[in-house]
Each structure stands twice: as C-alpha cells, then as structure tokens.
Image 1 (cartoon, helix red, strand yellow):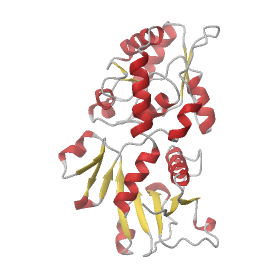
Image 2 (cartoon, helix red, strand yellow; image 1 turned 45 degrees about the vertical axis):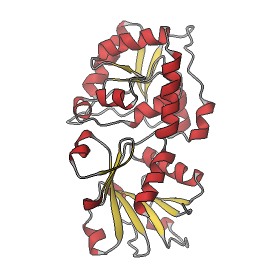
Image 3 (cartoon, one colour; image 1 turned 90 degrees about the vertical axis):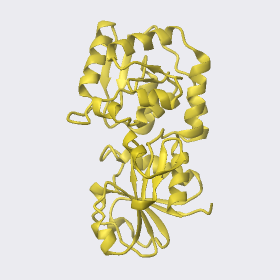
Image 4 (cartoon, one colour; image 1 turned 30 degrees about the vertical axis):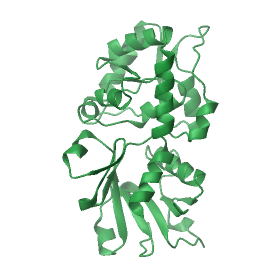
Length: 295
C-alpha cells in the first residue's frame, strides 16, 4: 500500500481525553512512513501542501477543518451535514461494541468491522506502543520494599458510561489490603507508562454500560503492553484475549484473584497475552485497516 499524506486534526496533547488517541494515530502513521501532520487549527496550515490528504477528525474540534474535494475524511462523532453539503469524500469511525454484530457489516479483523451501507468503520482503540517498543518494557517486577500502589491512569467518569462506582470499590478493597489507589491525570505518555509500571497491578476497570455492551477499552491493551498481567471485569475483554487474562465481574474478587496471580504467575498465559497485543492491538494494526477502508 502506497504511503499517504495524513492530517490528524485537532486535540493538542493533554487538551482532551481524545488527544491521546490522536497522539497514537500520529505516531503510528509516521512510523509506517506516511507524511503525517498534527494540526490544531487552520492557522497551523501555513504553506503546507495538503492535497490528496486523509484527515483524521473528531467532532468536538472539527470547526476549522478545510473541506477539500481532493482529500478524504475519517470522522469520529462528527455532524456530517457540512461534509455532505461540501460533497467531500468521507467515512465514519466508531468504537466497537457488541451491537455492531447486529448490523450488516463485513469483518476485516478481530473486533474490526466495516458497514458499507453507512460508510462506518468500527474498531476498538489500541495500545499507544509501536510493535518494536514492546521490548523496552519487560514484565513488571514488584518492589516489595515500597508500600504497594495502584496508579490509575485511565478515565474516571460518572453518568451512563461511568466507571466511578467500580473504581471506588476496587480502591476500597485495595486500601483494606494496604495498597494505595491513586488517580493520575494528564500524564505525558512516557510518564503514564512509568506510573503504570510502578503499580503493583494494573486492571482495566469498566462501568456497567461498557461491560454490558461489550465495549473494549484501550486501557487493557496499554497495561498489558506496559508489562502487567491483564485484568478485567468485562467478559467481552476476557473473551477477546481467549481467557489469557484475569477476569471477575466483582471488583473485590478481581483484586483477590489478581493478587494471587501476581504471587503465582502463569507465565505462559502472560506471554501469550502480550504477544497477542503486539500482533493484533497496536495502532499500526488499526491504521492499516483505516487505509484499506479509505482507499
């Protein structure tokens, strides 16, 4: 597949949760040899030649995106009206959940589907590590000389899609076991990796809506790639990993089982989960399928 010109539009790093997704897209496209730009506004375009580009766009920051008939647009949570009125070539991106399977979709990879009738690509997010970077982060070794801590680098949300009750229960059982649970916000990507690696464990905890609807969070891919045992309260995530990770719907029991797994690791399963992440769940995987759909 030929190299393309890619424009990741908006969300400077740390400006929004989605900025970490744009960061990962930017790195993956650049790593694969594509001419890649991360542009915050029309003022940043300057004298750039953006002809024949693919724009990666998220709806909260698409106000100033240039609409060009010689370009293509991949839209996430955008109002498509202006794109339709400008008659530009666009497709849409949504995050995978189980309801996708009830639609007329074509499977293009594990948990990645395309629906031609509405030009919609469904795929989960991924780890922000590139495949060759996995070697930099060997299996986490627990330092018994320090008070154990869990640094939660993921989102903390209320409402329908929220995970706060699950996090609070997990933090409570951690505290009863002498483990600090700390929420860490706006960490630089390298700092986030270090925070996770300095944790005694790194579960990917989801709220009830996400669990019930089979939503796959990026946190599971990241924490495994950063060197931790995979742990989840979601059956969909457990099944995606073919039972290679620790799973319990109850946060208290998940803590107990994960602690037991840390003390008595199944190294073969842990390595297989890591290999599966590197093989199938990096942004290099995701962008290859984006380019297939956008071609």
